[in-house]
Each structure stands twice: as structure tokens, then as C-alpha cells.
Length: 250
Image (tube, rainbow, N blue to C red; front, side):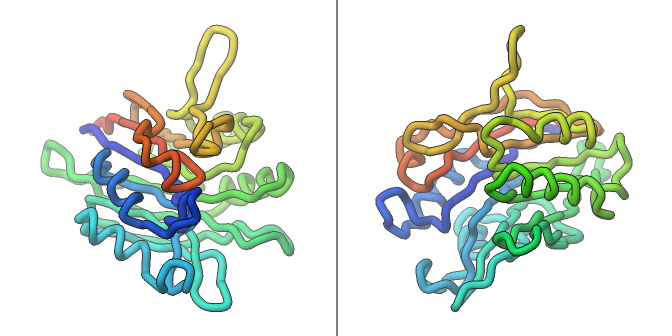
């Protein structure tokens, strides 16, 4: 079975033109028609986004029957964090706190999703939707926290698992930890004979850094990975979304 996954830091649907236009985010996501969408910087009840519950609004506009929001940052009014949208039932959800000391609050949302199979039996898929910090040391410690958390260590090594989101990892310093330490493979890296290059997603108008990534393991196989090439995506957020096709083997 094929799965289409998108990770997208939507910047609260406030574009580079400083306009709050969630309809642009909805159009971009609708055009790519994913099965599972990992969103970062999603507002709920904040004046800057008309006090909307953005996870619920976007899920409704796109026809996703299932979604979960994990809020990390509390504002004077409202809050924001990560949100996972799914075509398939979300059976469990928890927000994992990845905050380091007095740094800005960060988190990783864990969802358990039941994906229907061709044989009529469903497959349990664990999905981690994260947004890491801005400093290299902070990110290293956050990756270690994720690697040691019960939600991740309880997953069998051969069970399907996805870790995606905004890693803020300009120089790919975390790549070895996720690949060697967590036995993951990176769907969003382009490998050549000489080096490995991440798909560039930031800044959206002229991408230079591969901040948005999707890792996977278990009985999953990467088929393709591309950045969104829609012209509207260059202004809708400061990041480009990445679209990954995976094959889930039953």
C-alpha cells in the first residue's frame, strides 16, 4: 500500500507578504492530496490568526476525518504547536515535551494511526511530528530525549514508524543520530556518489537549507520525495512543504 506524507511548517498561515491567508495553505495541501500531513506552527485561539482553531479548520476544509493538535507555546491569548492530520483513524495521541531549560518551548507530537491494508487487516503506524530548537546543542539534546522516550523505545525495530517535521538542522548534524542511533532512513535526502544532500525547503522564496525532513523505518520503502513547486508556496509560508511517497508492506 502506498502512503503520501507531507511535512509543512505553515508559519501560522501568515505568508511572507504578512497576510494571514489559511486558504493558501489549504490549496497547497489539497493539490497534493496526502494521506498524513504533519504541520508545525499551528495556532489555536490567537488574535493574529483570527482566534481560529487552525488544526480543526484545515482538517475540515481538506476533508480529513482525523486530526490531533499538540500545543507547545502559550501566548498572551491562544497557543500554538504541531498538528497531525490523517485519512485514517488516530487511536492514540500524546505531546512529548522537548523543551530544554529556559529555551523556547518545543515539542514532538506522537500519534498512533491504524492504516487499512489490502487484506482487510489494519497496520499500526507510529508517527512523530516534531519542531526542534534553533541552537545546535539544543537540537542534539532534543533528539536524544526523543530517542529515549517511552513512545519511541516501545516500538519494535521492524514496526513501521515515521519521524518528520521541522528539524532546523542546517548542516545535517543530526543525521547520524537519527540514522545510526535510531535506525531510521531519510526519505528526503538525495544521495550521490560523493555526498548526501537534503531537499531544500527554507526560505521558501529561494531555498538554501533542508530544514524539513521525513525519516522512516520498519516495513516501509521510500518511493519518491519532492518539494512543493507551486508558485503560491513561495509566499504562503517561510518554508516549503515536502511530499514523500512511501510503500507500506503488509
